[in-house]
Image (tube, rainbow, N blue to C red; front, side):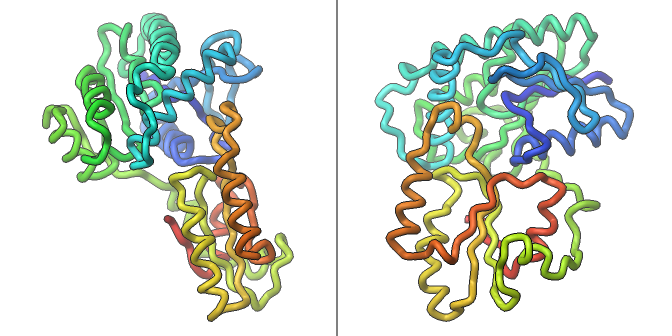
Length: 319
């Protein structure tokens, strides 16, 4: 079986939830004999095709997307992202803010995907997440699957919820990561026979208990007698960095020898939008609480190196 897996970004080297999920999924499908084609958007000046970790990746379009078009597209993505993560929206009518550009990129990609379906005789098109929700538009004669990677809850604003559900209905199957999200989608109008629940996967050959000694502490010049509080999340408003930073002074009162380590970089979407407001806010908070000597930002870490960070920490916090 030939399966086209489509997402707007794919960065298996630097990691990130969706890219890691796709990397494991593609490898798993290949191991059981399926053939996969990975497609994503060409956002920067990069080759139209490449091979990363044995996975062939096709980029669309041939030339990088226009910067203004891309910024507007990302603005609309940000509206969906915030609405689904319970972050307040300031949009009176979200369809007036980047929606046309969002449609344009989705529809152009959809026509390209339909050409690939015919050329490579693809059996299934599997689209990942909200950024390409409309990419089904011009694909003909093959089953369409959507995996929804972010929350879907009752708290999503009604207009946005109706928009998402109306397009989910166009797929043969919608995959959610947990029962709560699927239940909310059905409550919002998605048919019960449309969804499947597939829990996120991880590579247990890589992520397993192992002793690393003081290797991590030596790498970041942390004293041996210090404790490490670890948070592996990308730096954006929904990731809760503020909560941990605000809690740290109370921890230090009881355990003075502690370092809070943040692993993760700025999402590419935010880099493209030049959205550094949240990062400035975080740095200002650290200065105001006089915590600079207790907090380490590692930036993005290669996926295969993460087990050392998890195994070397005393507490892992996911906020």
